[in-house]
Length: 424
Image (cartoon, rainbow, N blue to C red; front, side, top):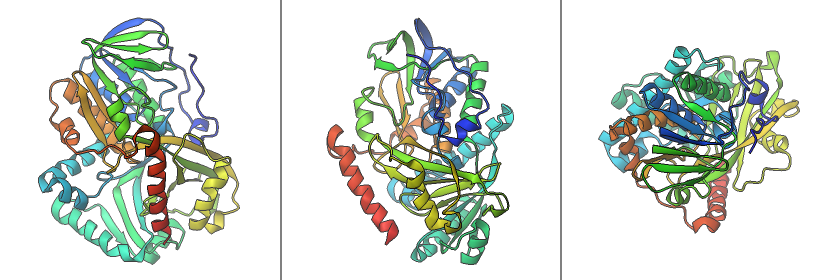
């Protein structure tokens, strides 16, 4: 298998800092840890483990950051994918506090890595949450008050409708808030910067290396198309690309496709004077930000099969035009899709299916922070302290109904209902 190119339609490919390929694994090797997957989780785990003195081999089927980690909206949010009220009602206040603290740690981890490893990835402070239903404004205010009162988080400033419109250049929303400690970055350059740091710490990275089997013995034999790795520990970090590798995980983690465009440079028409990222309150989220060269990078719309829309630019443009009608006729210079993974309850899936095998995936659109934190928690668990990994692993996680063949159409029906609810 050869090393494939990055997606030429993606804006991040056009602005990549390091396009050098890594070799294909074509021999038999041994290591303390074999990591499967070269996205945020896998590269983060490799970096942590190598820094702790473990010998690490990372196998990536395509390229580092080729999947969702190098194609996403680049937004780093506070908290988990589910809010603190949901967490408190499902796991209790003490556990909800642990989840909050770890999400805060994830933000610090990202910023520290950028500084420590001199990663050029366009980091910018600030993220705005926009509310698309007037009836939901009271809930947003209660959430902000809860975070300040119970969690000591005072970085959120509520915005009324006029303040929000001035901040994001559209009156399509009823209000929202600005989170000063969240932010956004160039995700592909960030994961590539981490990969460079992992290699400098001793990790061996192989691209174009598809894993075909994970053995059950000890040490574990990881078979690839042209070689194999024997390792004491295995990290499965394939997220939306799990086919056939671990059935229990695959039943609980569903791949879906999401789509993004990058407009022509907008210059003085830039709608976000504070340069924050923006995400709205829809279940099928609209999210956007400005690039350093002042392009609108806008994400919107999902599909539930491996097939992309015939015209991705048109597919996303119709979502963008509802928010920014003034840019409905703007030239689209880049439009791309990517496969992420969701779980039924939208919390990430952490498990140890058997001795020596660690799984973390299903970040449900919240992976910039939590997937990177997952690498640290896996590193802790491999080193003998699995407490924080198990905080996630103890979350109940139902399989998607319908089995392998029916779960996708059933989920498509469910998501269609949520999309209708968003529009009502």
